[in-house]
Length: 44
View 1: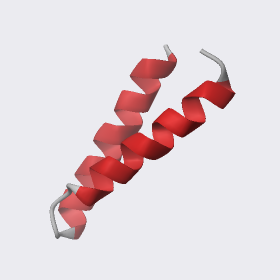
View 2: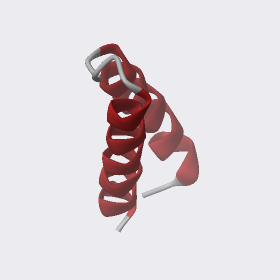
View 3: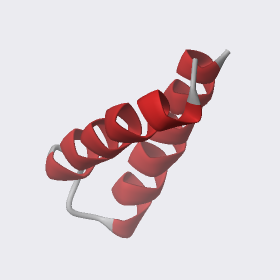
């Protein structure tokens, strides 16, 4: 998958993850980590 195609998907995914994450710093950290993992899986 081309990097230029991955960026918009990643931005949307991160935006939804942050919008639905818990209100704690710990919750945000877990959501960001899972988002990064999802982006890596899509890139493979």
